[in-house]
Image (cartoon, helix red, strand yellow):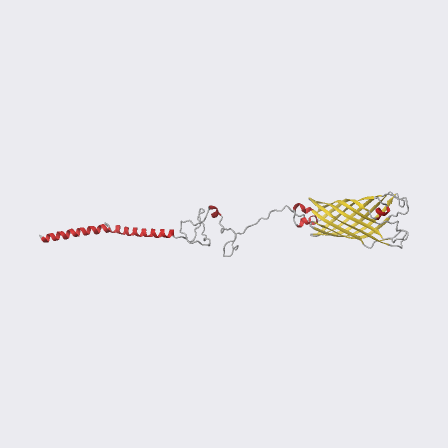
Amino acid sequence: MQQLRYLSLIGFLSIAFAGEAFASIGQTPDSGRAAVKSDEGIAVARRKRRKKKRPIPKTTEKPAVAPAEEGGGKPEAEGTEKGKDANWGSSSEWASPEWASDKPDGEKKEGGEEAIVETVTPTPSSYKRVAGARGAFLLLSPSYTAAGRSFAYSKAATGNLRPYEALMVSLAGMSAEFYPGVVLEMGGLDILGIRAGYRQAIGLKSTPKTDEGTEFQTNWNEMDFGLTGRFHLGDLTLTAAVSYGMLNFDIDVPSGHELNEQVQSLGYNYVRIGLDARYSINQLSLLFGGGYRQVLGTGELGDDTFPGSSALGFDAHAGAAYQIVSFLEVSLVGNYTHFAHSLKSNDTYEAEGATDQFLGAEVGATVFF
């Protein structure tokens, strides 16, 4: 009986221990494995949270660029998890980041970074240079002229007034025009320029008809300088000019000679207003023009012989030029200058007026730049 009691106690304790064991490990082996996996998932989640909270050190290097995904997605940066946005800034910064450039390879800054190269499109200038001599900024024109002069009094009442004639007089000259606005490409101001010219008779001597063995040294020179304005009208170029000029014709008769008071030297000072025209047909240009000369003084004739007299003048020319190379043309021009005098008679000299005419055939060349 007592043995039966011991056996019953042992059986009861065995059943209680077995129930506690099943309560701690679950009812099946699969349930135990699920519990282990759950504990591992909790540990991984904790590590991820600690990793996410850890601050990412800042760096000055720019993120490496990966090819964009279809649909315009953003490229991923090194050091970030897939699906996590890098610090790209605002949408405007993403649309045109500093380091994103479509410039060709080879345009690099120091360190291998792509340089930002700005392409500057020049603003179209309103300036347009006309080809050839018509649009040159500098024109240099040496010339040779075969010239003649005819001076005569009208209604001369005294015998001490002599006319003068000369033919085939050689004059060498040089003229220049400069347009600074063409050099500086100053648009509308490129039409304005300055000009100057000079020519001189070579070896001229005068001889009285009554005494052909006597010769008097004679000086004939001309000069002018002033402003010009050049206007292009298709193939036609008009050049307006305002200039101051001098024309001297001085016969050196020795004092005491009987002709000393019968031959008067002239020295014209004048202001000229003129207009020249050039019509171009390919390399050939037709030249023509003229001007008015307001005479300011006539020298010895107006000061000593006929004090208080006055004069006016005009000139005209016509010819042609041919451009033989890109910077050079040759020309042949005929010119004519006329001065008309209104004289005031006195006790010594009596005449109503006088005319002074100059003719010339000029062969020249023009070098233009």
